[in-house]
Amino acid sequence: MTSAVEATPEVRAATRAVYAAFILAGVAAASWASRIPQVRDELGLTPSGIGLVLLSLAAGSIISLLLAGQIVARLGSSRTVAAMGALLGAAMVGVSIGYLYGVPPVLLALFAFGFANGSWDVAMNVQGAIVERRLGKAIMPRFHAGFSIGTVAGALAGAGAVALGISVTIHLAVTAVLIAAVVIVAVRAFVPDDAGPVPAVTPSDPTMVGSTAPVTKRNGLHDALATWREPRTIIVGVFVLAFAFTEGAGIDWISISMIDSYGTSAAVGTLAFALFLAAMTAGRWFGPALLDRYGRVAVVRVLAAVSLGGLALYILGPATPLAFVGALFWGLGASLGFPVGMSAAADDPAHAASRVSVVASIGYCAFLGGPPLIGFLGDHIMVKNALVAVAVLLIVSITIAGAVKPLPEPKVS
Image (tube, rainbow, N blue to C red; front, side, top):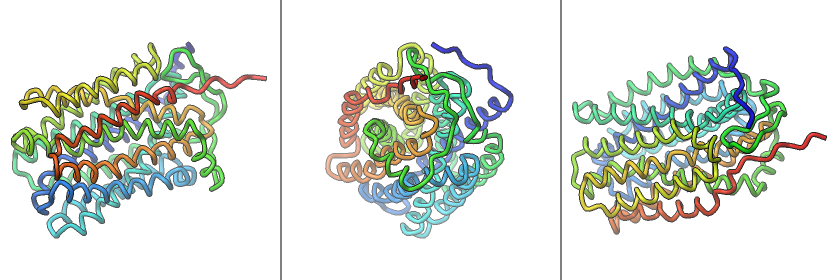
């Protein structure tokens, strides 16, 4: 195994900036998710109704993700995250005010939220993959742990806001301004996307080493379409979809299902949501050591099984304490699938932007189809029982996990 490379001050600064981008994205997502029950009640929505509202956010993300490869290639990852941070902040302010006036303003604001989130996601993952290669060691899961840390912070702040009676408007508007201001400054420390040669290492696996090719940009509609015909890229996308569905179902529905199925208060439901996110954070923070020792495939298969067990306990558990335990294992098991899939998509630096865009686009279909599916089933069999759909995709992820094995080192002629 190739040893880690000593980081330059430039790369250390970029590492901190990538952490900031992931953390702030997490704060934004959880801040909105923590107030879904209050928005639902104000708008008088059924489970299927809130599912369709969430569909607007997912639709914005999907459209953005389809364009993200070209956006990042044209603007670069730094300017893309900055621009999308400003748009996301404006969208959060729109949600914070719009929900007082009905469903249409919320739909419009959430669409903009999703669009900003999609390109932000691809751009920060591209930059994270560049930094990971420059460091010569697995760090992508820790960047995603940063996202989870942000979601925990956002969820706890949301729980506190609910407990203190702070309005959705004040909570989300203040959060939006802070996120936009900080991210625009932080991303100035990103390294250029075409920063040149990188260390001869492919992170996240003990037996494989990577390309020494420089990071280059892949432009044009022809190249973008060609990426959609790559079998490995598509399978990695489906793998990410399974874990995105698992993660997204927890983010969107744990608070509501705790309130509706277990009869908890809104604050307790939000705490279960925060526990789920904390478990994901722990898995992502400590996961790189497991990935370096045992490799991507073995680790994600075991964690998918852990998530299955936690999900079963959450659905079948007869009491609130067992639901909390189930949420913990559900989140822990879901922790590494998405970041490992992003690393797998970015294994070849020359094609990282386009492949990350494709994989993220497929993965985000979980957020497009997941909310209405769980909501529709929830109208008939309760949200908690509808979560069995997550188990099906986790089983699929175990089956196709071999696709995330790192690409072999190119032969030197």
